Image (cartoon, rainbow, N blue to C red; front, side):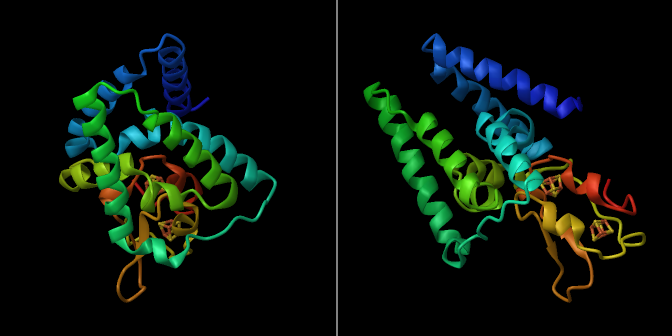
Length: 202
Ligand code: SF4
Ligand code: SF4
């Protein structure tokens, strides 16, 4: 089993244990540390730690294996205003939780939403356009120093990396001449590296 999958499995177990013992708020500490570290390492939380993504990957892998067709991202959601409006709502809910001590089931709601979205849509709909955790990490990851790069000299522009990316983090440049990785949207899942026929992503 690849290293990333082992880390995902372990963090999913930890997440489940915290739910069972009623200490799920501790997960926010893990997220907080990951958010700070994302200024250097990028959105590694999404690719390695996030229980929502771990569950989504299981559904996504299964859908890909069965070649089950899913919807593309609705155009209207590509407007960044929607992403940031969701983020503001999420932060508002967090403020209520901290100020009143009320236990709002924010994380379980997001967990369920991520899973339902992945059943009907490609995962980039969630990772790039809906998830408020992802939006926050994406803002902090703009400072990220550790990022995957595409080496244009060896790239044959087959587009396989663009197609497989679960976060819409690989786009063609303005002249559509070569693909580029948007560093603060990359989940560090390594899927593009696996499909690249020329070993151009490092
Ligand atoms: S497929 Fe590549 S660019 Fe896309 S999220 Fe995974 S590692 Fe990042
Ligand atoms: S998969 Fe590799 S060769 Fe194909 S476009 Fe992406 S970087 Fe270039």
